[in-house]
Length: 244
Image 1 (tube, rainbow, N blue to C red):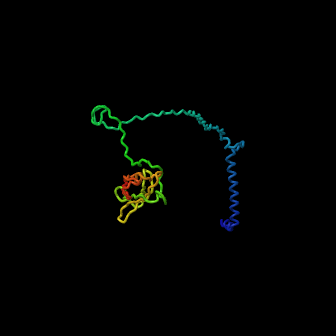
Image 2 (spheres, helix red, strand yellow; image 1 turned 135 degrees about the vertical axis):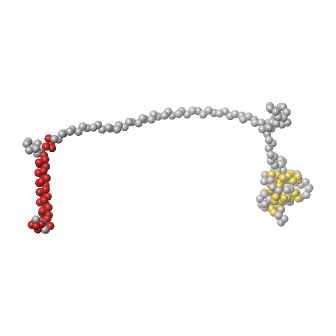
Image 3 (cartoon, one colour; image 1 turned 60 degrees about the vertical axis):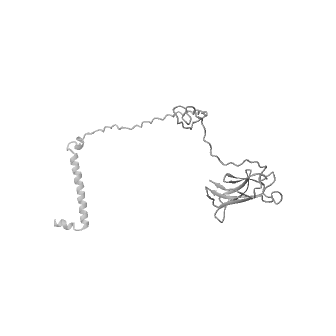
């Protein structure tokens, strides 16, 4: 044993020993396989004698068949129908009066009889005085009938009963409803809102002819003065412009 150990005391000899041991093991394994497969008579392999050859039976594999989806049939296109024309109808008159009497048509006192339908009276709107002038307003001239002032229209300007703010109201003098000279309202030293406009009379073909009625126009309303051009009532014509 000591000799074997002394023989394999180097790495080279140890590698050689392991190699020989491996080769010997391979031969021993081959001999074992030969003894297992040989029955000693006709050389048939025991493993082959006892083996049963089985033929694999192919199994049916289920194949998934896709079912075609039903094809959508085209829908019928609706045929456009002609839109009937509605004949205009007359709306019946509705009686807005309230009956306080017994059943049936009664008047406002409750007695029998029918009550006539009456539309509510419209709120009166200030309108311009009738235009009877022979023409448009004629401005003053340097010579002739319109060269000298014939009078002055002046007065207070109020809105809802209070003094109007300065420069917020345009005031016109009108002759038979035809607008003439204008100005904006001013505030005097006492804090009062007012206006003044001088005018001149002119020939009969002008709106501001002698005899034309004088009024004041502001914010769509006319304010009559009760005076006319050249009536001899004095040059100052007072009027108050009181706007809602």
